[in-house]
Image (cartoon, rainbow, N blue to C red; front, top):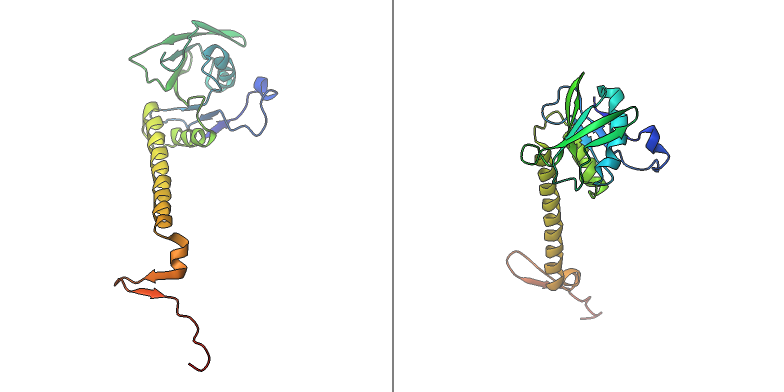
Length: 199
């Protein structure tokens, strides 16, 4: 079963109820990704407290977080969270840029896909579903790349449809169907006028 966390009590008053989910957790024993998080900004100091507030009761007290600096412009060393401080570290080459690692001394480690804040809601929803699908075994960056490929393919298909429509219009399009039509043998069949009476 997938747990979907939409809002934390501290954030609930600031966010309209129609907002899409920002955190989805995968079933236990997932291989590579334990869920997906869609932060509202790239401000780690502002985003982490609300995330940790939600996860602490579910996973045990989160004590350390690591990120890749390519995603976050400023990485604070410590972030105060309700009742404790979370230490923040970073790894450039060793950590997937689209992954957030959360550590608890008492329970273990969790990896979340970080969906870029500027992602459109439909794409973010798709990424959340893919990240929590037990049949997938992609890394965080692999998921981002797969969604990008799907988006590119959809745009290409839409462009191909537009091209076909443009060719159709340039060859007479809708009007050509009414004035003349061609059979597969190339014969032209025109509209036959109604014969005059007595002819």
